[in-house]
Amino acid sequence: DTAVSQTPKYLVTQMGNDKSIKCEQNLGHDTMYWYKQDSKKFLKIMFSYNNKELIINETVPNRFSPKSPDKAHLNLHINSLELGDSAVYFCASDNAADRGKAFFGQGTRLTVV
Amino acid sequence: AQSVTQLDSQVPVFEEAPVELRCNYSSSVSVYLFWYVQYPNQGLQLLLKYLSGSTLVKGINGFEAEFNKSQTSFHLRKPSVHISDTAEYFCAVRLHTGGFKTIFGAGTRLFVKA
Image (cartoon, rainbow over all chains, first blue to last red; front, side, top):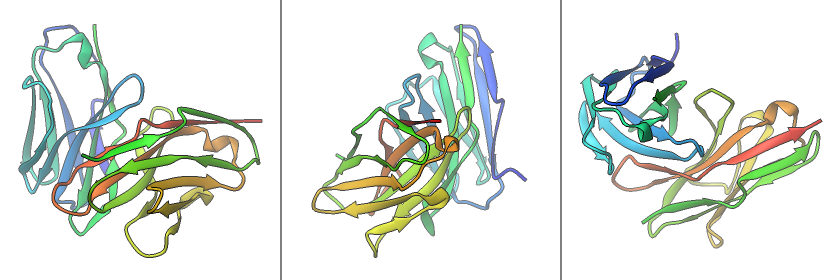
C-alpha cells in the first residue's frame, strides 16, 4: 500500500546505455514530479506533470524524457547515460487542492560507470 | 527569482539538547514554506508547513518552526532531540501563484550524539 513507489531502487549501468525509472502513486494526486538529488544532497526539480500535462521542464538535458501514461504514473527515460547522471532520483506527487503536502518515493539510486 | 538558504550544512548536537536549524528565503511574491526530513537511504517526509495564519507551526516528531516575514526566515526548532532525529533536513518554498515548483535549500545534516 505504498503511496509513491519507484522502481528500481538501485540501478547500476554503463555509460551510453538507455534506462528507465518508473513511478506510480496510488493517492489519486493530480500532479507528479521528478527531482534529482546530487552527491551533496542538493535537490533540484526536473519535471512536473499535472493531469498528464507537462507543467515544469527545468534545464535538463534532452536525454531525459518524462512520460506520463496516466495521472498515476510518471516514468523517466534517460538516453545515452553519462557519468554525471549518477544521483538519486526522487518521484513525488501532490494535489492542487493541497499543494502543501507532497509525498515522495524512496528514491532510485542511479550509478553510471 | 526565489531562493532558499540553509545557513548550516551540518549541526552536531548532544541528545536531549535543543536544536535550531536555520532557513532564510528570498522571493518577490508570497510563498508557502516547508520543512522536510530525509532519513538515510529514504525519501523525503514532510515535517511541517506554513501556508497562512499563525506564524508558529507545529509538526511531527516534536518539531516546530516560526515564520518571520520581516526577516524572511523559517527556522526549525526542537526543544530536546533524540538519536533518531539524526537525518538531513530540507527547507523549501513554493510560490503562491502559478507553477507547481518547490525550491529546496541545500539541506542541513543534523547529527545527534549520545
